[in-house]
Length: 202
Image (tube, rainbow, N blue to C red; front, side, top):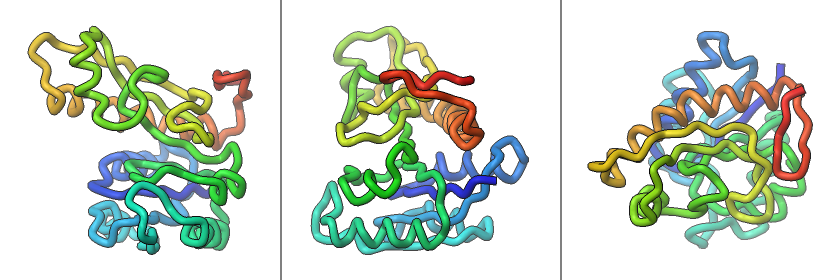
């Protein structure tokens, strides 16, 4: 059984979906620890409520990324917990060299849009302003470029004529909760190969 860790900054709804999938046996992985850069993150309490190790690690002075010495502490903590796969779930920091090198090809992220469309933040507003008829979510490997790694899975959500960024986000979130555990299962199984930007099940 592979050990996973979840890095989260906020409410932890994707973490909740991952934990539920582990507890009901549909996700074949052990949750070694949950780490947050936010001391008040609900994700930490969710982890504790389910009996999993929950850790706050100092993110340092930068708002959107970790200085190398702080990121090295994240690496050290993950390694101490024998983590095989790192899963970002609303972790609001750009991953840099220390984590990328230590866990090369072993970091996943979920993004609330159909990449490569609408990377970055505020994606539901961007989708509505652009006029797309479909949006969704993407689970992808993390690389040095933001929201640009090989795609593991995607789920499609129709954009309704009366949608707001909030209503669209809520429907996409339901698909995130279904899709992320499925994607993690694919990766921890090892039954896949990467060709360019495509993750192909074998």
